[in-house]
Length: 156
Image (cartoon, rainbow, N blue to C red; front, side):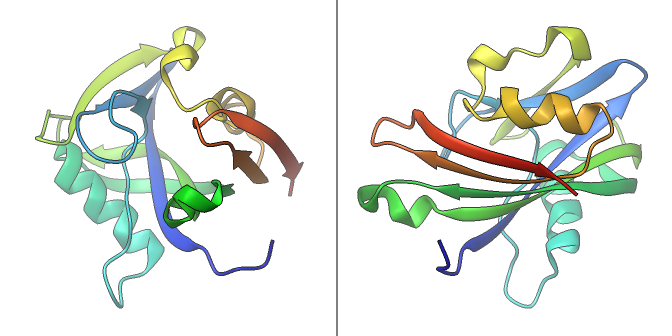
């Protein structure tokens, strides 16, 4: 598909054998564990948006991070406003201690215990790969019930 996608970010904090996930408390993805992130403001770079969203959502400022994936998400016509391209970052250094906000409740998980059943269905396909050091490009298509219809994942 070639239509322009809205841009968004996700950032995952990592320490030792743990990953920080956040429970989305409202809006898009409510009730699911995910990284923190969101959409850029006008004239804001996607990288700056990732940092800003991390500060706003969990009160942490990333200082060392790497882009690890570009994920394109497509939803049915009835939810086409959800279509987006997400830049994913893994963060190994930051300033501050993760704190709950009105939007997100952060929790540290052992990487071996990531709760994939309580996340977006696509996460179990790409997140383990980036945690293993791969750099990915992927496309995911969902149905009207937000169930994954198909996927295509390539390593860069």
